[in-house]
Length: 313
Ligand SMILES: [Fe+2]
Image: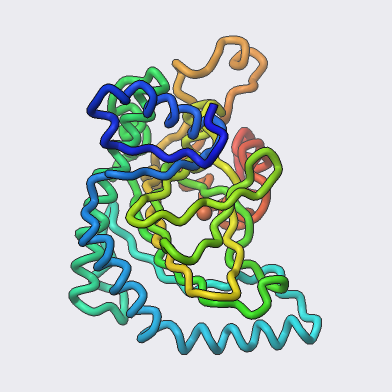
């Protein structure tokens, strides 16, 4: 249906355009694994402040270390050392749920900590709203996906804050190597001027267009499992850019570590069940242990491995 990158204005969900917007969303989840949302409810003032503080944080706290890494990487690669397993990124991680670690993360000013905390609360609400829209399109009852992620301590929610500084040799090193995301639903606040994020669509890399104050959403492996493949997690990568420092703030709304993940029975056709073509059932933590060792590899062998009684490799 949708030929160009799917963009959904959430304001349309309240009006006559609702049916069309839900169809675009359905097509995006089935065929793109990605979409971009506008009028998502997070204020532009908050987004501008998050961006300003994040860019300042790179300049003041991470730039020096990154430049050391960068010069060593370039020196190694020109000497012929293999740098294909490196990513041209400077990053740190904040955990929000089940327990926040924001107060313990070093080198964050108090104001930045509090803005990121507020931003995470907004993103959490947005992720849960989106999960319910997905439920509606899938014919699942409201709250099904949120509940499926719950486990004994609720969902896991965290933010990876990244900068992709300018790279003089993008032919030698990737910004971030191709992968699918392991978790549930991912909300990305990306730079509106410096591009670089690409997704794989029909075997071709397609740019995810930078758009001011939009949020990019993508589907993780767990939603592919729960929907029994109806929705797809899609490979994506970041191409290092020769100009500009790309900001990327990706928030991962994932299952709790002990949540048991399995295809929603309503979405598994009988035939698939009999032929054992359904996606596997597993504890999310076991999947993550496997993913950490095989992130930059195709997802299908991971799903296959989880069909085995003890998935330790
Ligand atoms: Fe990713």
